[in-house]
Length: 209
View 1 (cartoon, rainbow, N blue to C red):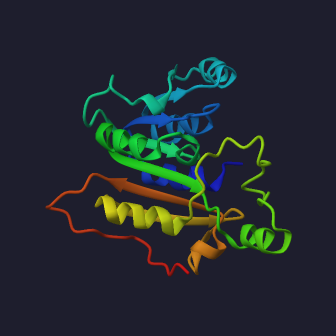
View 2: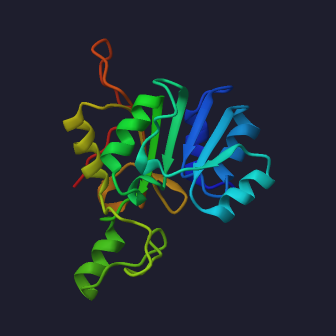
View 3: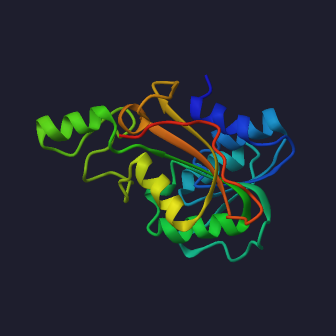
């Protein structure tokens, strides 16, 4: 069964588009986009076993560290650049997103919401770093380096004048529309470089506590 975040991303990506997946893992999303949207896909990954699995599946994936930038790619090289469950793991998220926005005409960012209800509940009652279904790691083995809320990212985009085209909030394989900063476990955002000719628009309106 396809993960709901992959379904949402597939719905946002145009058929036949060029796609660069930063931190593509074992290539599940790239395979889905190739199969359902006939995209021209390329991935970047650091884990050697994940790269081996991607290559075995016929995917074009290169081993690179995206924290060093995307200097080998020109401006607007891809229709879509994807940072799904990668943004919170990089050392320099501000720099990585700037590079993604430079290289991609559209950028899809997805990350876990570190302040959803169950995480807050664990912090308040247990006084410990939360371990949840979407945050399954202990403090000593987590790949996550930055702990942000959905509201943090939207405030960041507003400050940086990053154009936000779409956003969707998810929990337990369903979309959340009510108080997502409290109830959503993951957020997905479609963003792009600011343009004077574009008026910011959102496809979903939500209240964030």
